[in-house]
Length: 330
Ligand SMILES: NC(=O)c1ccc[n+]([C@@H]2O[C@H](COP(=O)([O-])OP(=O)(O)OC[C@H]3O[C@@H](n4cnc5c(N)ncnc54)[C@H](OP(=O)(O)O)[C@@H]3O)[C@@H](O)[C@H]2O)c1
Image 1 (cartoon, helix red, strand yellow):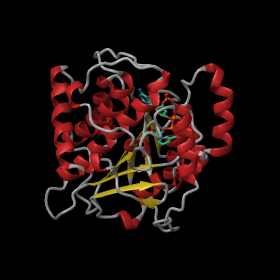
Image 2 (cartoon, rainbow, N blue to C red):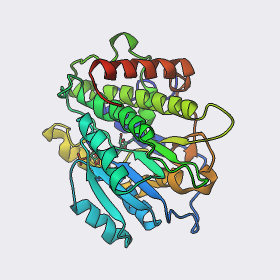
Image 3 (cartoon, rainbow, N blue to C red):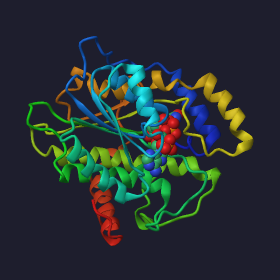
Image 4 (cartoon, rainbow, N blue to C red):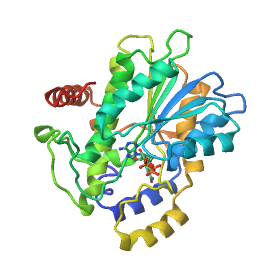
């Protein structure tokens, strides 16, 4: 049994596992140097109204990128915060609700019509739901936001030829994952996409399962986009480690003061925790890589289940079928 198995089964064990991972010796693969900038690059980042995504938007802006912040809330205030913090005025905010897939299509159209091509796409938004919730599509919300929305967003962006590919640089698609993707024992192929009830006690377990789906998708995406020798797209994923963000916003009221204290003491600030994300977006040493997974600032293999091409193929087919059956465009 691997180190991470069954450590993310509930909020308490996940918190302890996250903190203990921080104290392990991890070999650093590098650090951005002063000349590794993003001037002239256009970045689209989801979940940029809060936590890791907001801190990353500020840092990407400080490095000179034009940042399109796709957000469900905080428009335009958080965009103004990013401008003020970075001194970069090329910051824009567009609405998207990742549980409402029509808004993803609208987002892609708006980006294409208003801005044109993008160089980097960062799929960062995610939730830890207190309980299973149905979306208007009859699908579970955390499954939709944490996995399905990413499949739709990336595929629509590719279909609309949203990535700049004519300047010699390889576009980068980055997924914010979690070490909790290692927790599930297996895929639930038989019941894939079916709504299933869960409560607070199982929410972290479900979160880990959806991170497994997302990480398997990311790995399969890299294979499909780069079938030959040539690298057409860099697909990266990483776990930022425990972040003192708003991720536990749905924790029961009684636990919130404790969560605040534990997060405040042991978890890393979003500004510190966004280093792997910014590194994968901007580092020269990432250029031309077809795939990469980082945990904090170290390179790591993803879980065997997520890297297995057969699982990647199965996930892709099942997801396409689910979306088609539900008349959802992707
Ligand atoms: N915090 C941790 O310890 C930790 C550890 C490992 C990985 N991560 C990953 O880090 C990423 C960022 O999370 P965070 O910790 O920064 O949490 P956060 O502060 O709660 O930020 C989550 C972001 O996702 C957005 N979001 C949620 N549901 C959405 C929806 N339906 N449509 C559009 N946007 C939506 C939120 O927007 P609103 O503000 O509008 O809700 C917010 O901007 C996630 O992928 C998470 O899984 C976090």
